[in-house]
Length: 115
Image 1: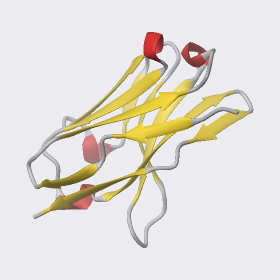
Image 2: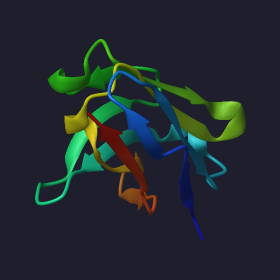
Image 3: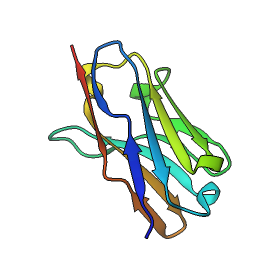
C-alpha cells in the first residue's frame, strides 16, 4: 500500500515562511514525477509545482520566485519551501506522485497565512 504523508503545514503571518515535506512509501520513488497541489476554500485544486524524475522543475506563475520544490530520492521525499507567503497562499496543500498509470495522493496539510 503506497502512502504519501505531508508534514509542515501550519499558520504563519504574511511574509513568513514554511517548509512542507512529503514522505513516500515508494521503493522506486526516483522514477516518479512529483507534484505539489493546493486547494483553497471554494476553489478548484491547483498545480503549484512539479519536479520530474530527471529534475525538471516548473511552477505556477503566482509562486515563482517565492516557492522552491526539491526532492531527496535517498529519503523518498519531496519538499516545498515557501517564502514571502501571502494570504492568498492559504489552502490545503497536497503532494502527488505519478509514474505512467500509477498515481498517488497524500492526505493534505493545511497552510494558513494571516494578514
